[in-house]
Length: 191
Image 1 (cartoon, rainbow, N blue to C red):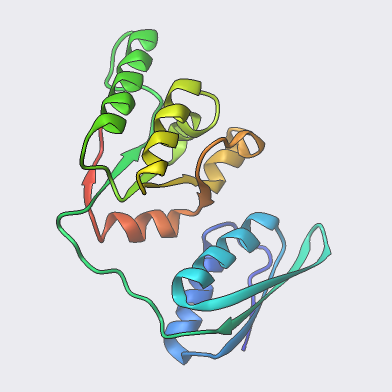
Image 2: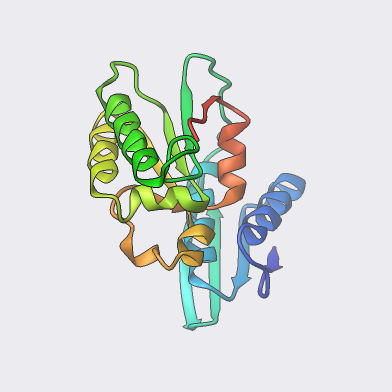
């Protein structure tokens, strides 16, 4: 099965591919995209769904992502004991900017010291500053990652703020994946 997702911004190539897999349960797929972020997101999705992914870069604006089914499709388990923490800002609350940033650093430090850690930390919009340029929050997230927390930052947001090459912790994801996680776990959203 072939999917032409060229000209579509993230997360559309992932959504198109998931729909095709859902409808056809295809063993092999070829997805054509025009940007590297889409290839990264498709590889991550493939891994989650039990597909092996390989990428061919024909040019900087022409990629082929080949997927081959390796095992049965994985599904999320709805587990009320596990939770995710969502960051859409680098500040906690509304108030004086520097104080709000210090509150955020205090929150991430406190979170890293908790016995019960989140399954995921999801960063989008201005929250991607916490996984890139704020050294204190990066360190806290590294401690959480060692405990098993998965740290994910929105690729489109990283690109928008020109921070993609400054990512210091975790992996790049897309809004579709963020939405998928948020609808399957208890959500803590401090900002």
